[in-house]
Each structure stands twice: as C-alpha cells, then as structure tokens.
Image (cartoon, rainbow over all chains, first blue to last red; front, side, top):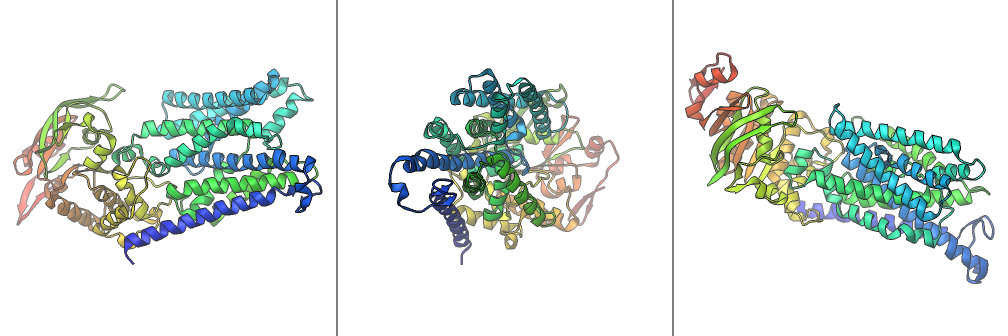
Length: 339
Length: 251
C-alpha cells in the first residue's frame, strides 16, 4: 500500500469515527426528547406526544430547545477550551484561564443585583466583562517584567480572576438573600432549566459563527501551538491569528455561559478525550472535541433533569464527571506522555 | 542572483540594547553562509531579521525586500530549523513534518495526499520514515533535531535558516546532520546557519560572516576569511587553523 494511500485511509478512518460520534449524539438527542418527569419519571414512548396540549408543549417548547442548547453550549465550550489549550500550548487550560469565566460571572451577578436581570442584559453584561477580563489580562501581561510571554499571561490571568472573584464576593454580600443571591448562586452552578427558543436564538447565530470560525482555523491551531517563531516561519501571522482566535473563543464562551451559567470542565476534558480518539492533529481533534462536548453536556443535562425529583444543576454534574474522567485520563497516560 | 542582500542593517532591542550595528553582506543563491561568533555576538538576532521575525528594513531575499513578501510567500522562500523546540502535544512525526507544508495549503485547507508524500520523503531523507506514526514526545535529542530538519525539508523553500544546527548533538548525529545539510547544499539549496563552532563553519559553509559584539568583523569566502588571525580576534583567545590532509582543523 502506498504511503499516500495509507494517509488517505487514516484520514477516512478518523472521519468515520467523527461521523459516528455525531450520529450517536443526534440519536441520543432524539431519545432524550422522550426522557423527563412528565408524564412519569424516565422514558415515555407512547401516543401521548401526539395528543397536543401540555404534552406537545413540553416536547417542543421545553425539551427540544433545552436539548439543542445543550448541544450548542457543549460544542462551543469544548471548541473554546480546545482553542485556549492550543494557543497557550498547555493542555491544562480553559477559558477561565484568562479571567474570562470570573469576569462573566461578575457581569451576570451585577445585572442580577441591579435588578435588570433580563436575558439580554445578563448576556451583554457577562460578555462585556468576560471580554474586559481578557483585555485586562492581555494588557497586564504586557506590563509584567517577569518570565516569558505565556507565563506572563498565566500570571496576569490569575490576578484578573482574583480581582473579579473578590468583586463577585462583594456583590454576593450585598445581594438580596431571598431572590438575587439565589439567582446568582444558581447561575454560578450552571443550568439549562431556563432554556427556551427565545434564549436559544438570542445567542445561536453568533455562537454558530464563532464555532465555524474556530473550525476553519483547525489546521492553523496546530501551528499556533508551536513557538511563535516557528509559526511565523511556516507562513502564519501568529500574533494576529492568536488575537482573532482568543477574541472569538471568548465571545463564544461568554455568550454561552450568559444563558447557561458557569459550566466547568467541559472545555478542559473533551479536548483530552478527543486527542485520545483522533490523535493530536487539530484537523480532527477539534471537531471531535466539539462533538464530544455536545454529547457530554447532553448526557449530563438529561441526568440532571431526570435522576432526582428536583433538578441537579448541570455544573455540578459536569464538575463531578469531568473530574472523574480527568483523573482516569491522567492515570492512563503512559509515562512521559503528553496530551 | 543574490539570495540574500543585507545593507547597513542595525538593530536595537526595545530595552535600548544595540544588538547589531551596520551589517552589510551579499550572498549568491546556492551558497552556504555560516554566521560565526561567540555567545551574545548577535547571531540569532541577525537570523531573526533574515527570517522576518524581527522587522527591519534593508534586507532583501532573492532580490525582493523582505517586507514586500506575503506570509505564505515568505514561508515558501525560507524555512527555519530552530536550535530546539518544545513539544506540548503528542503529534506524530508525520503530523509534525506536514506542518512544513502549511505555506502551500489553501486559506482554510488541510494537507493532501501529495503533501503527505512530500512529508514522507523528507522523513526518509533524515532517516525517520520508519517512525512516521510515532509520537514526537518519544524522540531522543538527535532524532528531535532530525525531525526539525525534516519539517524544513518538506517546506521545499529556496533557503534554509538553521540556528546552531549541531550544538546539542553527539558525534554520530552531528555527522548525520552535516551529511544531510551538505547534500542539500550540493542540490543548490541556499543555507544560512549560525554557529560558534569554527570547525562546523569551515566544514559546511562556502562563506563565513564573523560577528563580534554586534558588528561584522569580516565576511567572505571561507578560504579568505577563516584564518588564525581573524579567529583569534573573534574569540579573543589564541586559535590555530591547520591543514591535515584534505581536512581543515581549527583548535
């Protein structure tokens, strides 16, 4: 077999795995449409869904937008996590890395406390402060006189996160305990219980555009994980490309969490799983990570809304499963191996 | 045709430290230039300027000002073999070599089977084809240097820039890298490399530029400029150039 043919066959094999993963996610989405606590806990496959009224409302106005939001949010958070990991040449980072998550959390909490907690205002505020945190980390890193450019970014990200985190603490202190504090706490635990078509469409097009842009950079992400001089030598403009991708990943993340609340670990573990399945080449591991992110969030959300009589916030489940998967991945990693 | 033209180039770092002062030289296509000097002489800075990584006017590649090149065009014109590179992800050797094909890809494209063929040939040339599917994280220091060379070969550029290409290699790997570079030079590739090793400069280069504290001490064909007097001035220590059969030895 010629080497070129082996190369093509290997790519076809990876494409097939990716396609299977997407199909599995779609099939499960369809299946989970019939899972919930109405009319009884668990799966209900009966003619009730075709009888109109409450049943159809639950199916089309509650469960379907919620499932679609889980797919979109999972994919976006994974794509952002993957992008951050490649841009910072570090498999242990995610968008929280540069203060983005804490900045968004502060922005959302601020709107909730001010009392203008409409979806759009929370979204705008979370996005604005997420981007502000990114900008602050970036500008602060330029002023640091310690370590290389990556280390400076890491350190400035830690500082910016701490500042937003303490500001968030102050907001929680002054928040009205029976309503605002609860809203903030639930937002910080993450959840899709508020999902509606209106909410979904309020972020869908921009988030899809962000995902498409990240996807179109999938080969370049490989090169951007190398040293800047090397990326330059193979025909890239690394400074410009890094900035574009950072902003796109941050906007996508902040918009997503502005309606889902903080959902941790998705952006950290799915890139690791994808690299196990597809290899390190981002051409496949990025879309693989996006598909796995959708699947992971879909499963977590379905468990969260069906396991107990009260809903379990999705952020708690992603943290729990994420940490378990993370421990397994790191334990299985062969000695001296890299992500 | 001149592959490289540098006219009165100086470079000062943002901190105010002057790294290079009034450097001028011209190099014919197909030549091999050693930029020779001790640590801190400005060799790597000069290489960065030729690469276009640090911006400065007054440098021409193949008759065209470096600033007039598009990014991909520049990538097709020169390739870099850095002194070392850190691996953060488990790319395969084939993945890594394919990175050299990037200047030839469409805007959002991926490598084709033709690119894979070229990458395999490059791996074959450095003797790593059998390990194409192995992870880069499992390489020895010598194999690591050979892989960086394979990526640059796959880039099929007109000029190869190498930063201290053999400084971290054992004698066997040093000989291997030298042999590959000599072969590339014989096939008409223009080589520009930095080194503090006068023996390597003499063995591989057709021309030598000696840098001392950011200034050009001398530039010319190696037979004209590599001599006891110049090397002693360059390194500020007594060095002797002697002929042993067909070999020239500097000690």
